[in-house]
Amino acid sequence: MFDWTTPPRAGELLLDVGCAGGNQQARDLACTVIGLDEDPAVQPAVLGNACYMPFAAASFDYVVCHHVLEHVAEPKRALHEIARVLKPGGGLSVAVPDGHAVCDGVYRYLFEGGGHVNRFRRPEIVALVEAVTGLRLVRWRKLYSSFSYLSTLLPLLEAPPPDLQRRLLALRHVPRRFMRAVHAALYLGTRAIDRAFHTSLALYGWALYFERSAAEPVELPAMVNVCVHCGQGSPAGALRRLGALTRICPGCNRRTLYFAPFGGGV
Image 1 (cartoon, helix red, strand yellow):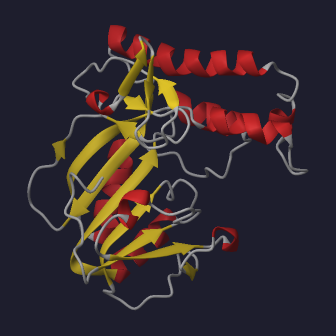
Image 2 (tube, rainbow, N blue to C red):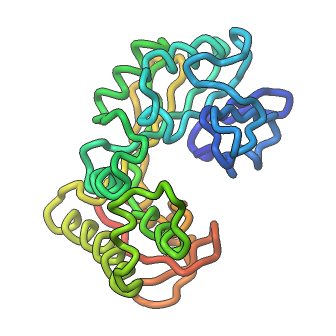
């Protein structure tokens, strides 16, 4: 993300809202990164709610809000808080799923909602962020799905926690080879249909970057290949070839599926 935005420099502050395990790209920056999350289990730097942040106004040079707003019951309130703690010249990076896409639909069904309480379309989320924060969309790109949550199911089903969703428990006796085949069919099949019929079945959502700007927003090329394990998107040229349909992910160094870029993607 920071290769196409204006990242904060040394001495500046970045806020990672809903940080969970933390943003690896943000950790590699020279700036100071503050993680905020309401889940004490992830051990954030600051324990708190996105709708009521324990920070002074105009504290941060950059705010990252990735895969958070679909979980927040009051997204407008959370955006008001982001606008409050962001400096006037700061930048905001937002990533959300398309709430009407195949990837989100499968996730919501299997995980019985999975904490997703909002469904966004791109024009809707852009309009909401701009109206609440006063910032303007500068650059954006489509995010392709990897259905990586299907990979996380396999070890989870080996020792299911007592509160695991009933629909997931029903998968305990499904052969693992069959589940991997379904995963591959979803990953490769949605992309093949999109390439043939110019649809958006393989879409996960969008990465959106906002600043105080009067320029027209620019759409950047999407990364068609996304690791089925860690969810990192990579240009095709950055993937080490294994076979016709497999590559090595540079993020987690595991074997992942591969689909030749199409539709202006890389």
